[in-house]
Image 1 (cartoon, rainbow, N blue to C red):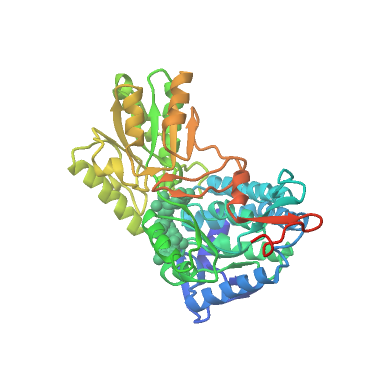
Image 2: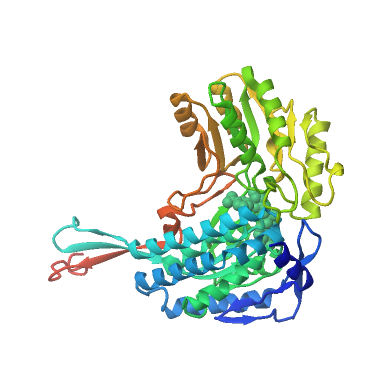
Length: 499
Ligand code: NAD
């Protein structure tokens, strides 16, 4: 992989938009260049699309949806296309993983795992395309049959962030396509490579032109055009709560439906009775996966007071063993932060925490590392009101707060504007079940961390968003229900005569 990366450094990969089945440059001809955060070398150039490109993509999606060829296609036909894309993802897993690693700086093994999991999602959605169905009511009297039709919602805009580019797109796009929607995809301007590669796989799989359009560009140009457009019926937005609010405001224009997957500040809750070594490993995984640039990162550690000091010290010890380095090196677990601005935000959050009274147990010294590598950092003596306990940092930073009993643990866990995920470590079944039921979050892992399955839905409570992706609910999100009232036999009643 080092050789292949070297070739990309010498000749960065060039990408084009995918609109109406054609591969095109931005109308104004501009490009966005992307450097590998870990290597400081240019690796990709994407079209710098503008509003005009976005409008062309939206028009193509609208036309294809209104023509009905995909919207009314047999589910088996849709399933075949989606399965073929899954196969292309598997066949091209090495290339896709390399692009993902060079653009995001996540370790190569993680990138490869994400590509293969993305393929699973396309396969799973293919299955749903065949079983999507409505309902019937045969209990409305002898002269009435009620049908409930499930129809594709229409043109869907999918706007994604930079942290899990192909994976997050695959949690949404195949489900929208399985439902029969037409789509405009806008990936993050920092990591558009794998989304743009997908255009070729969709075309080769035989997706009708215009059903899926993929364009690169910035949020204020392309993203905003999608949010504003009266021709877009729904937007699936994944990103920050700040831009989520922009999406809500823009959706008022044509009252479009929004599915929002936003930020998080998820707790890992460790009870004294749990398997401590397994918990330490799980807590580290949840806090540092993807360099902590993960919406469901376990960035708050709530640990039972009786074991807090020992747990925290052992945690710091184990963290020193986690290898940070070149993401192309198979032994690295932690790569570089996505860009300088994000790196500086992380450093500033840690400084704020220390100023507020938190104590650095380990890490927190980015100046001792080169480039954009931020060391895993544990902050102790954190109080619930501090910004490090409340704000999403989006870096490998863990804020530790001891708790006294189950009630206090649940209180701390729920004392957040967010509600995306929670991790619970205990061997006491009733504690595990009580936490699972009372924590206000979309996903709870018990004695485990971050395992994902296409079968299970994901989404957030509170300011972490609304709507659910994946699982069988994932396809329903992209549908509308319609009731059909079917009269049977002669018309006995007359409206006019009965008056
Ligand atoms: P971001 O909100 O800055 O950007 C997300 C996307 O929105 C990008 O494609 C961006 O170009 C676009 N965008 C920006 N301004 C826009 C505008 N005015 N109109 C339309 N689109 C616009 O988020 P990010 O920095 O890319 O990602 C990090 C954030 O995403 C974190 O807050 C993280 O928690 C969140 N996230 C959430 C989930 C989830 O499933 N809940 C998953 C991953 C990331």
